[in-house]
Image 1 (cartoon, helix red, strand yellow):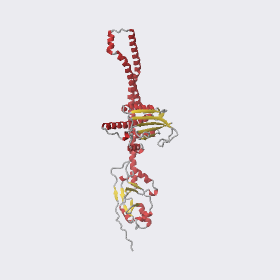
Image 2 (cartoon, helix red, strand yellow):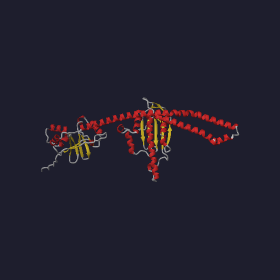
Image 3 (tube, helix red, strand yellow):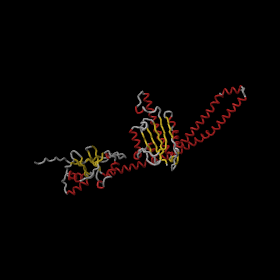
Image 4 (tube, rainbow, N blue to C red):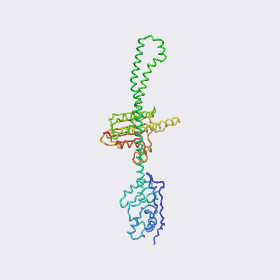
Length: 462
């Protein structure tokens, strides 16, 4: 009894899916490249496929499948080699697929071009020229010419190099601008510090002179018990008793203001200090106090600063750059606490219950700064070394970071993300790790309190 013949489908011509006309970017995927959609069934003859490949010279090959599943691919070169070895063109594609065993690289269309190029280069030398199989959906497969992938890869590398060059230029301009600003601020600080020095130096003499005048008045009163009417009238007019009490307090207030202004100017000088070529020993507690002095206007009475300073030896570092790190972290903490305070005020005004994630906060927003010398730790997220480390922990009792924001901050710490977008925290990470050989750790929520955010700066202690 004869077998029923299998109905053959007509071979469909290939379809070219054009590339994205907007151009390539650093995050471009395979979907933005030109893809060839050409699928043949396992019963199609090799001659039919070869004739179509001859009509379309840019077609890298064909996708082999049956009516239900994907079987593999064949490149233009492999098809011609098979036909020459078989010395016939009447064989079906199923025979070719059973004879040619090549590991097919199948990638989803969402794969970044940079990643796809690396995976393609890892193939064996025999498979280097084979096209890449791009899966658009579970039933649709397309082919990507490996040469086009390499061209796109080098184009993106060129874009990345240009971006790095432009970023380096911007950093150089910004560095020079900050250096000029630092020199300007340093000059202004000197101009302020000079008259403050005059005031400060003369206040000591003014206090002594005032006390001597007061002693002289007291002696006159002792030896002249009967005060003339004109002098008594003058004492009443100038309120001598009140003047005796208020004048020392006025001098003390001027002294306090001059001392505060002197500290502020010194803090400004330290923050704008241009680091030397080589690191120098510095007192980190003085650096922290200087930054807190500069940020005091933002603190007001809303945020409480609690400092738990341990005994730290002088640390060899770039003090100016570390001061910038402290400024960035403290500013982020203050912004989070101020935003939380605003939300709480609005919620109270609207008589809405406070969100559950904020219920366990302290009544007053607080930033805690803790410093200590830490030996080698078994904690996996801390550096392992036989030497000791300086630990500076800056924690707030705010609502903490959402998982999405936490992930975004960690991504900015990577070199790839810093190329496209540099933030204050990514710059701080670079200063701590690249310039000082330390670690910048982020914890949110804080493991101890299950709320808030903590940054820990670890610096090697030589």
